[in-house]
Image (cartoon, rainbow, N blue to C red; front, side, top):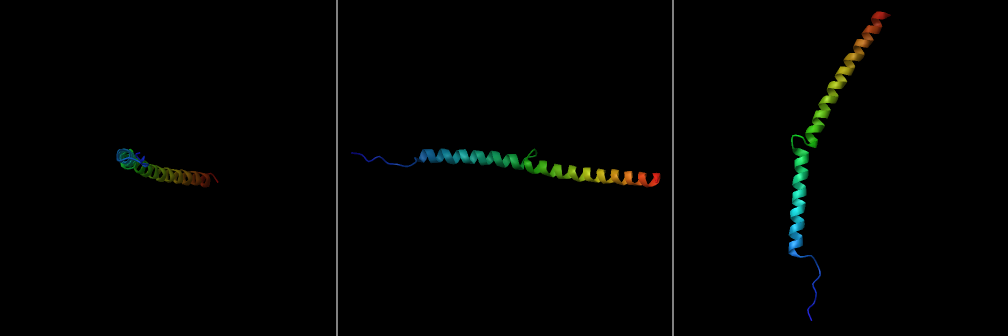
Length: 70
């Protein structure tokens, strides 16, 4: 009698879009916030630069000490 329609319903489509929007919002906040990935990467870059400067200073001091002992 009645032909059964196949496919997704409008309600299922709307729910899927809402879930995707929520996930996108959470992801964007994790990337951009103060404790986000970008901020942590910038902090790591700064810390690495500072560590390299300290290491170079220590190596220079050690080199000077070795030269003085010779």
